[in-house]
Length: 377
Image (cartoon, rainbow, N blue to C red; front, side, top):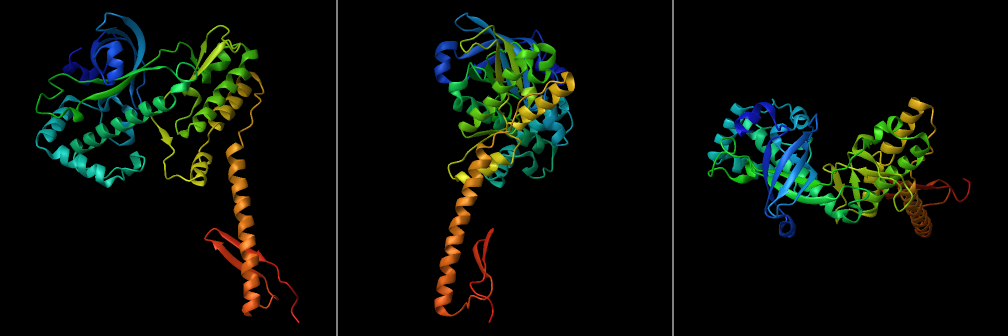
């Protein structure tokens, strides 16, 4: 399909795309360019366009995979969140002209400076844009951030690839051709579309478990899904998009562990990574502020109960709550010890007579009150 037609229809089955392989090591195996023929487009598109594609490499090998493209033009959920109008050809013309003037580069620099580079980018934090073109610049940059986060997550979870998460095949760049691509006077950063190629998983969403797997397998399948959430936490990753719709159950016959199903988690563009300056307390508090495994276990508990009267044995993990509680108890014991020592010194100095409660402020959020040592009189 020509780019001039895509403004109305988006990506369509049967069309071919030329993709550039981003990773130098992958290029040795796959070649620097891939030809992808779209076999299926998943609808609706949210933050990315997801397609099944048949890949032909420059070495004349072929395979089917899933292609995720973070294309600002066709991410309706993000456009809705930003209150932007749907993408159109005239809007692209305005956008390209804004880029040619040099104003887009200035706005992007200002945007990056206004948003703390050490803070996760959020749709709620973007500066108010005066022009539609500026909103397109923001959305282009935001889509790039989603791509980078998903790619980083796959790399951090390399030991889970091909099992609990799909195998990452490579990362790619799709360069829309003219006229929408804009020509040589348009810096690629404003038009190129980043994406990833991942293993195709045949199966059904965990949310549809009751309709697709025998009752005796439900507990085991749900246990596997919950375990994946815990494995992400073990890698200092918090997936803020954990949902039963993002877990695929794939019949595989009995594998090495004797399981008839492979359970796979998808979609990592909204993951949060533990930063180097995050203390244990800060990171545990961050994890505990999100549903965590409840988003899988408790949701499936309710779904299976309502659908088939099945009681799923699930208890939300308390490992992080217990850690946080033990740290709080340890800190409170330190506060009590400090309060006792402060009271002793106050008694020696005569600034406290022991007949009233002794109040000691250990931290802004920790106050210790010790009882009187002796009654009045």
